[in-house]
Amino acid sequence: MSNPVTGSLSLQQARRIALVAQGFRDPRHAVPTMRTFNRTLARTGVLQVDSVNVLQRAHYMPLFSRMGSYDVGLLRRAAEQRPRRIVEYWAHVQAYMPVELWPVMRHRMASYRERRGKWWPLVDMRPGLERDVLAAVRDRGPVTARDLESEFSSGPRSREHWGWNWSEARKVLDFLYMVGDVAIAGRNDQFEVRYDLPERVLPAHVLAAPTPTLAEANRELVRRAARSQGVGTAQCLADYFRMRLQPGAGLTAARAAIEELVAAGELLPVRIEGWRRPAYLHRDAARPRSVHARALLSPFDPLVWERARTEQLFGFRYRIEIYVPAAKREYGYYVLPFLLGDRIVGRADLKADRPGRRLLVKAAYAEEHAPPETAPELLEELLELGRWLGLDEVVVEQRGDLAPGLRAAQRLAS
Figure (cartoon, rainbow, N blue to C red):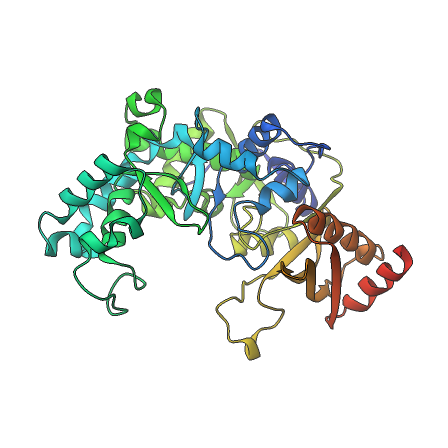
């Protein structure tokens, strides 16, 4: 792919463009409303879902990072009450996406159906099981896998082969979900998925919408990725909606979509200082002279989930260490980058001690370029995070070079 470069950006300009595109220049309202939620979702495009709850579940945190303290019921209402605005699907990984993306994902759903025997061998090994589970959802939905487990699971669970120790009912429901035969109606208090028929979950106009061609679907995913990222390489744009999961998609298809969007004037080829690969700027991306952000970022925040991009934009090497043995962790179990201004200036290993109503700062580290105000600014953000989570106290432990400054800031504030 060879498009004429129309301009160049400094690394600082690219960072600021990316931050504004992700919503970090939008004002935080005292009481965020559904309108605030809609604006923020339009920035991020998707919200990754993850079960880890050591601090707060992944899909809630990016909203806090951009909106400040908000009622988490906003997200639940958007996902579970009519008119539904968002629905879970494998849009990045497991993620909330706007409901209007459902027709765009039909090619992905069809590709999973073609791979049923490879990825879901159970649906072929037990003829009729898929039909019977779907009928049970139709008759009783919304249902959890646990609701159907005794009826459709033939024996004890096994960790062998495929399935993360899932029950057979759960495996079949997962297949039906991935191919679009069922949709996620919500989750219960134990975070278990509640499955139902798409026509009882999604708005009728969404289900009636025609399926775009694969090329049209690819263009739409690249277009949305470019809006949410502001500027990025082909690799960045392809990863945002995990286009490699689409049939005939991946980086090659993303590049073809980029070519078409460049020709249409929606994307502008640019060079970014220090980047070897060409980049593409969305034509509507704001180019601010400054960004004055302050936010703790979830490990699953769209701003940082593509680690190579994070390193290129911010000079910040970031890995999540949940699955690393404790003795081998460099920074901690659940470490959140700290964004200040237009730089990531530190990181904090955080845990919510809910019984003790304490926000535990297990460790805190500063980057080499962290300004002198990093500790007091981080403390302010930790205090707001604690209030949002219903925790009464921030407790800073010993580990990390930023911890002494945090404790000193606490003493000054008390």
